[in-house]
Length: 240
Image 1 (cartoon, rainbow, N blue to C red):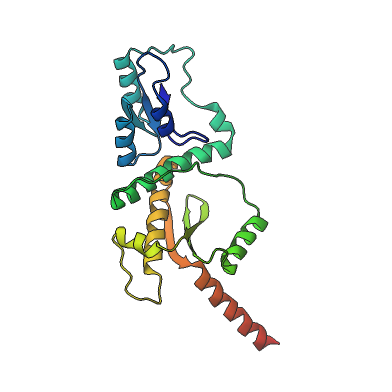
Image 2 (image 1 turned 90 degrees about the vertical axis):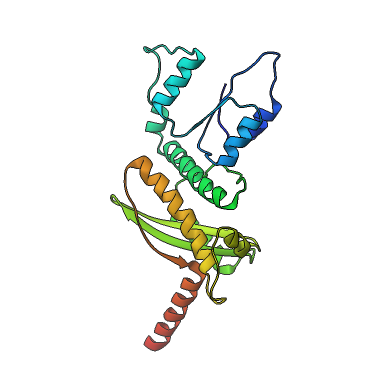
């Protein structure tokens, strides 16, 4: 059985817990982008025999297949996923899934705890959707929300990473990651957490597409919008 971990409805861990479903032994090979050490250990503890990380190494998979006595027909064996090639959304979702897994592994190693990985939601976003998201941030929906934005460029790609942190224990989370806040009126911990999340994701993404990214300065969105709003009001008052 080749088993993924991050799946809808029932994840790979739930599948492992439900086995055996038949009265015969099943060799289980977990093939996942979730490369947290705790995830690997959890899989093996639940009965998995092997763990291969995405993107997997062809030679490693071939050796394992030979060891297990699996034979592939070279005439029918598909070496590339044509579905991903012709569907940019699916392709980007898989790239994002791997990049998120790498980032989660880095944070998990710092925390010494398991991070539950969701399926990445990848879609085209209209400017109106982005405007609504920024309006929600500005209006403070949920109150326990801090938004950080960070620009990145490289290889003709211009991107903006938007990180939203929710909850009361953000600074406690930062302490566990080894970040300390030196000024109560600034968001050093929040910025450090966002930097870690964005940089770990972009490094893994850039490795997959072979395009290095240059990352710009991190901005706490609420502070930037308030400052920009003040400047706009001052300019409007001056000109009128």
